[in-house]
Image (cartoon, rainbow, N blue to C red; front, side):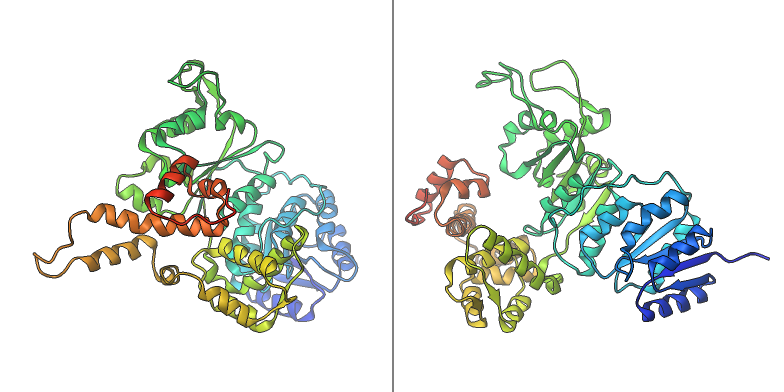
Length: 477
């Protein structure tokens, strides 16, 4: 007769214990439940149980603190942590302490059973080392299911050097996730180096990535280190990888395949000692189909894909994000503010085409410009009413789709009903003018900051301001 595995469940909530007891029993497991950590520890030291499910907050001890003690006497016993404290730090700490899996509350019972079965079937490897760093600043905010999955993915990748591809709309926090992967990974003591492919002239990308020797090209008056060398022992974050030109893609692929590179104009190979994290707002699979991105490079980078949800798909996280940004603003010397319930509902009803970055900018503006301590719905309505109509309409589709619809409207149904000559320059001007103007408005006329955001040389930005007849905001640099 086959003996069913025994699952030890520890949670101070009687309802949780009952639900798990019934679900796991129906799935064919023996179940023992406890309301505190002391009883669980007694069972574990007696050699009972084949897998443990424990809550974090219990009346007598924190479940995370119990994990290393259990792993010390029974290193092969799998431990699943569940918690209503659904932050990334909880997931990371559970993994650091040696937990097999982290489950945020409320949980799906089918998922719990699946995790238990995996825990019982998966061969046990060496336990993780415990990290004693203590509490760190929360790098990501949100308790929505989509964010919980991201937290779990970050926690699972802590002990690996796997390449990661982060996809998501602009403003969703791709660099924050990249930094979290670095800060809680194997290479956290090394440098984190970021490079934005869309912000670098095509002819300089290889030099930026790999460095160059003195005399390698006109203007190369001395040797320069590239981002690969600067990130040695750490993480290289390749932002907007979809904008990388074809020749640079080929060279990057060679580096990933061979593990070494040469500087521009150099001959001696240099070992590439970096972990690669890439990010893009493009659909890379579509770019591959269109022949604009190498398929073999895509597979090299897309070992672990992470997709960030737009803010409009996780509006339940907005109150927590607002409080976080208000606290940051107060820490920078701005007056402390709060939002009343109606104002918060207005924010949650908005579609946020600029995602979390747009929300952060709005919150900082509220803290800086309004005298009232509690912001009401009337202020939010006024702020959101100032957003250009074109930006409001973009949430229903991509920017390219909006542009396509606009251009399509310029062509009539009859063969002779065509736009006037000069359409290309006209469309470019229609896109460039609001882009530059809104960026200058957001930076309050600071042309240095605006040129950084746009990825333009400052002289180029000045030229465009003149050509597009954009009024200069007084006080800008």
